[in-house]
Length: 239
Image (cartoon, rainbow, N blue to C red; front, side, top):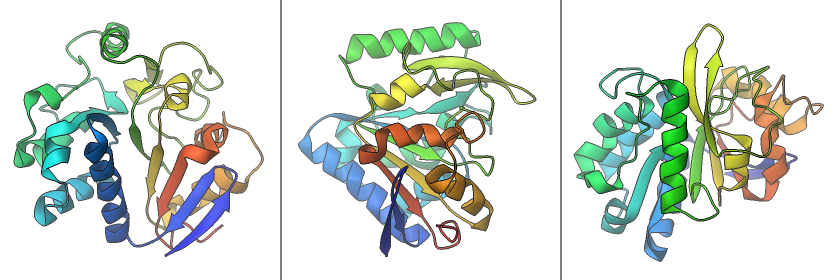
């Protein structure tokens, strides 16, 4: 394992399993201090993390009892859909661990996108005071997107306003997503990055000229002290 300091946060270079060990340790540490919230991500790596957690029993009883589970972005589909990020968390981990229903917080995908985002924001405001997730887990697209902040997304640069909103991604439909304002209120952010296909995106985000409309992950540069990238050697090869 090695750490690389970058303008977008610390990049920790380690194997996939070691990245899972670190993420589980962070979740367990949160739970040891009391109730906390975790925003999960979509994609193949989180699904592998869920299976690993169930197989290894890596999360403590405190984590199962105390963590409120969310997803940082979501497609506007039923939880039963194979495209649902929260649905994958439910089927891959939450059900198997016996996480109580009161600790599960999916987006209201039965509502129209803007109404679903407003309902999620309103519910969050009732439960919390100033911050968003205690731990926000993100993935990285090979086009440099994080959550559902995609290249040329009109939400990029909007650093005030709601923590959560809806956006229509051209060619991919409506998405529900954490915003820059929401990311600014997260106590910690972890980005899981794996594979050579992500190396160029990670290099641009960490070392490239600042152009967040082209490389949305660069918005995390504003939160460098709270961001950790868990990357394998292939993904970190360009740093």
